[in-house]
Image (cartoon, rainbow, N blue to C red; front, side):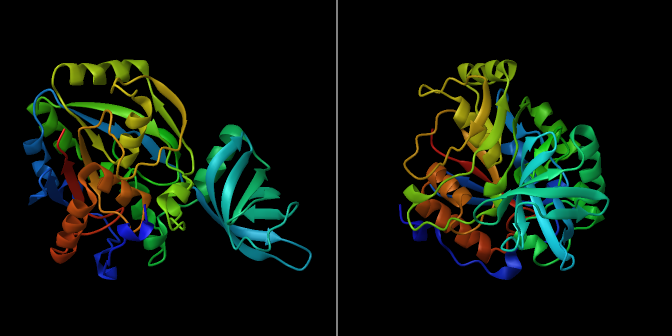
Length: 348
């Protein structure tokens, strides 16, 4: 499909730079299968779920993956920034570097007390670097020297600060490894989970470590030409069995965020049976995709031309989502990672 079909105009002031406080006070747009739109609050989410349903969250944890430092050469030090986006070994990462054009194998890097060396340089600003530390010692040093990797549309307007350490993390984050938060999950509070439990809605978790693809725009002109970066995902056998029981009993699975959805769709077979999954997924969902296991989706408002807007258009229909986004802009909803949410309820 032509990527331009997924374009829309978004005023700059609609981009949220801070989350709603408390988290579940964010606005909720409910989009029904026929295109009808309702304007509610996240606290109203239990009204749209019923006993026997399950909400599926991504329990990945964001680590402080952005490092600021210096490239050391005889001609003198130069500033360098790297985003650690894929661990290759106990002491090695694949990174996105800025600036990258002068980076060369053998260059020494210094990030505060943390030393590293460039092993190889790839395309589009990527490089492989080896640190002087490894394993748990490296993890501790990155935690001390790194900062939360806010998305470019926020980081370009303000620096990450102490508030982001908690704001840019879900309350159910458990498994460290992401360079971006599963942002639909940021809206949940203990009170909201308690209300869902009282309604008879269960909570299940998968893990998908959000990677570099979150930061990269779609540069192809046709969706068939776009390559998704693979991300590591896990769904254990016990969780798969419980989710299959939800469907067998007539309940629905509501994915919290596109990462939960992509994990579940990667784990489901052609008949909709959910199987254990451990490995990399590069699933790319565009209109025409037949959904196998997900019934509802809670998600934030996404970038124009992004793979995530393509995904929600596949679930609800492109015209429905364009109309919903136009209304969200007109009604001054807050967009992107720290913004408001929408609950998508397709016909199943």
